[in-house]
Image (cartoon, rainbow, N blue to C red):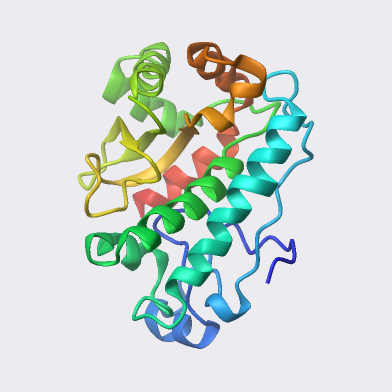
Length: 241
């Protein structure tokens, strides 16, 4: 159940699924969407970098605890929550679209599992920055990259309690920034912000407290040094389709 094989690029909100390969062929019909198999073969995805790969911005010990304790617990609880229910072989996207009917265990643990996979994928060092196309969309929506950074950072710093900040694509294909509480995300029908997620930051205290203590703002500022823009660019291109 917990083998650390990474299942093809999980993390795209419009693409992640919990379908079997057979049902995927029927439902998506030659789609290039990235998949996860149903819970019987669901595997805990490997962290896409070493624990210390994001030093000094995110320390190795925090990364180890965050991934191997917090994220793994969400995964295990999500698998248990959907087992034997009507949601067992339903895609993550569809689960989130009807999350108000799924119950708190699926909402909290499904969100916690998915959000963390998404988060790990948008982290890395040495990234070149937004693509020309994404940069143009950023300027259109926010006026400049600096203004996007300010808006996103403010959403993360001012999220009361635990939660996430998001850059996402709205239904009308415009960029927007917002935040969600707890383990909610923009794919959920109960979310205060709705769209296709492109970039996120985890602002639960366990994501930063060992290194930054109560200084969430310092953690948010450091985050910009480890954004994997290649992944964000890819998500933007796929979301436009």
